[in-house]
Amino acid sequence: MELVKYFTLEYSSSNLKVYQKIAFADHFKESRIKSMFSPLTVRKHQQTYGIEGSQELERIYEIEQIKPKTKVITLPGNHRKWLSIFTTFSKSRNIVFDLVGQDPIGSQKTLKYVRNFVRHGGSAILLDNFEDSESKCDRFYRIKIEE
Image (cartoon, rainbow, N blue to C red; front, side, top):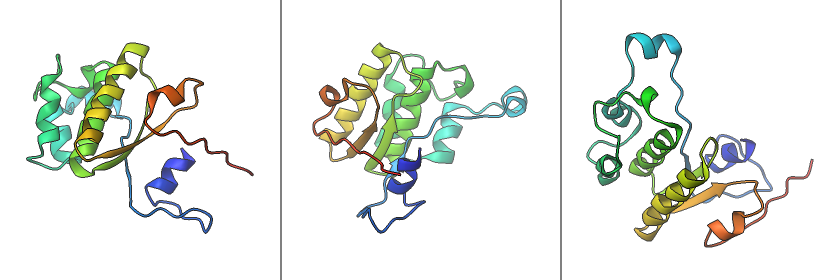
């Protein structure tokens, strides 16, 4: 996740120039105590982490199982990732995302959703370390970090 910190401008380096800050579609985390007493709903997650009134926030409800009053903690991993990506696109047209915790079918749907955002003026960087990464992207860059 070091690379994400460079893209989001948390870290800087004289060897790397980032021209625009990029938002990371972060993994959803909620404490066990909070989830028991006051679980976060999809709508509250959007209000907290997204930009109210954004079309991207409303498009998440086109996905089966996701409703405004759904408790985020009850969503399967793929759905939580999609909520994170849609919410991140509501506040930035440029995102970094990964496919951690997703099954192959969920990964394909995630890539479909992201490609749709990119077609409508967004940009996305997929962080992946699998051999078939090239086939998933329009442009492919291999980054090697030397110690």
